[in-house]
Amino acid sequence: MTHESTAVGLASAYSNATTARGDWWRDAVIYQVYVRSFADSDGDGIGDLRGVRSRLPHLARLGVDAVWLTPFYVSPQADGGYDVADYRAVDPLFGDLADADELVRAAHELGLRVIVDVVPNHTSEQHPWFRAALAGEPGARERYLFRRGRGADGSLPPNDWESIFGGPAWTRVADGEWYLHLFAPEQPDLDWTHPEVTAEFDSILRFWLDLGVDGFRIDVAHGMVKADGLPDIGRGAQATLIGTEPLPFFDQDGVHEIHRAWRRLLDSYEGGRIGVAEAWAPSSERLALYVRPDELHQAFNFRFLTCPWDPEAMRTVIDESLSATTAVGAPTTWVLSNHDVVRHVTRYGGGRQGLARARAAALLMLALPGSAYLYQGEELGLPEVTDLPPESRQDPAFRRGRRPQIPVPAGAPAPESGPAAPGIIAPREGEPPARPQADAGAGPEADGGAGQEADGGAGQAPDPLTAPEAEGQDGLRDGCRVPLPWDGPEPPYGFGPAGSWLPQPPAWAGLSVAAQTGDPHSTLELYRAALELRRAMPGLGAPGAGPSPDPRGMSWLPAPDGVLLFTRPGFACTLNTRPDPVELPAPGRPVLSSAPVDTDGRTVRLPPDSCTWWAF
Image (cartoon, rainbow, N blue to C red):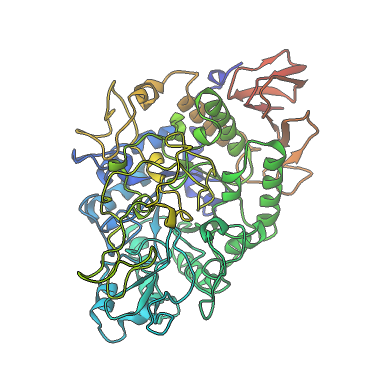
């Protein structure tokens, strides 16, 4: 039995009813579009809003409920658009406001909701506010976190905080003050104690809600408030502590008042508008605080994403996640990949094994109570691209770790490796390195990714130029952002009329949407079948759809070592994480499997690294 036996058309009458529900988000499947890499309409090699609009039918056919768009605002693109210079305008790279309006309307006509990114922790250095701050306009610096330096001459950073991208989190400007940037120097952090900051973002949210968007994914939702006094942390490699230990610049209690205010704003609009927190917290209980009834609707469950291919670890994460969110009356979210981490096909081992596990993990995720997020291309089984040439990479963490010494005025002694010399702003993150640098291999993901080495460059000795910056993000995020293959035998595979901003592998011809459509064994058709069944089967989606011993809508049953087995109303799910087949009593009638299963109706032989759905 393989997944091609699933009946077609089960969900045909469901979509409009789902769209009309005010609590649609509780069991929604939301598809992340990384705009630069989704579809290019004008031939410049970069995805844009018209390109996204042209491919919306693919998402409707896939069966998702909503589309999340990464930033498309006016931006110098120092960090892929997460450095915003104008929050109310579309960057010409991606189109204009009319294109955004038409995209939202087209999505709604197809029954798809639209969620857009908002970036409130920091702006671009090119934002009018920060330009005014550097120009010395009275009061302008109060919107950001400018401080005097330490030491007799103020030449040391105000504290020991490190940038997520590596190196100090402070840059010194010409008059000797320092400004905080938890990410790239081109992304100065805002001071959310300033009333103008609060008022401005209320206005920004209303602008996009009035245009018709259905909600916001809130970038760095845990970061807008810093501990009083900006205390030292006292240790290095701080990026590796995110999500595991308390930090004075993340997950401070003050962020919750901001989110409460935004929830009131969202609730003032009709149609079930939502807020989704990208939040890292040291525990599931701390993360659940972001989704209390008067705060945001969802928060990304990164513990599930970072969980290894281990049944006990998976069960622990699932139980703790469900317990924490159930305690505050919120749904749990599940996610396996996004634009900041190694694609899960590669994280799970790559090749045939990685793909088998990725397909199984997708079925596991879609069977769990709550809402699921898909990252573009995972429905095609795309692996991470690990051999991108250095000159193609644009991840600011990659460039930061490979830049030459900070420039100093002529005749002055060169500084030690570290912060910029007094009066000198560090070079822009998008600038190329002084000389080509070998990829030193991937270290632990700062944002909780795989924590594994990428295939390309693994095992090489660190370059002396990169060593002082090595504690930040690994700089390899471009590998999950390679533009999608849509059709055709060679690059750019229908991505656009010309090339693509990152090179696509030659092997991707067989992974394109066109190549997989209609193939009952393909990953694309597996996802389509799973999403159709998820809508059609009353025991899937949101918990509470029927009687169950567990109020979260699922119950674990005994299973052999290496196997997970749980039930929901009228439904069962088996996951075999072992490298060999496992035989057990059949829990029902198989309706979908990530690999062919052998059953006589009484017993079943589960294939290795597979997941199967059952009806009873």
